[in-house]
Length: 190
Image (cartoon, rainbow, N blue to C red; front, side, top):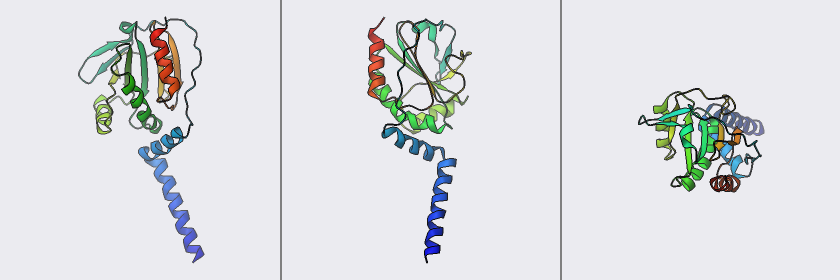
């Protein structure tokens, strides 16, 4: 009898591991749980205050509206590169959505969620199905490596002068008070 119980427990454990490995939403749920207990807290480090030329870095939404980062001088820019198939991206989405909800009516902060799938329609559908309101864009120009080098998820924040103020590759909890305070500080600083 002990041998059968042991086999059942081992079988269930292996099945759980396989689900976590092969089902993106299951892996995202596990990562999200780790975020909730305090892992993946973003680190706000000081960046050199050199302005970048953001002109020509372009994105387009599903309605065809184009946005050029160079035209957003005077606004704080929160730019997140993500993909629907990426479990860490899926895991951090609820925290980014909470952050977006806090600032969505603030004209001094712009949020851009750049689809790395290359399938804007799929990404918009993903957001809609999960009831996220975040604006999804496709990349329509080249992106400098200091902004995005291919790691998903990647989040960058520019201050009002177009200076790179935050860059993080990998998952982070963006609902963290440190990020909210950081965005508020960037809004009022010159």
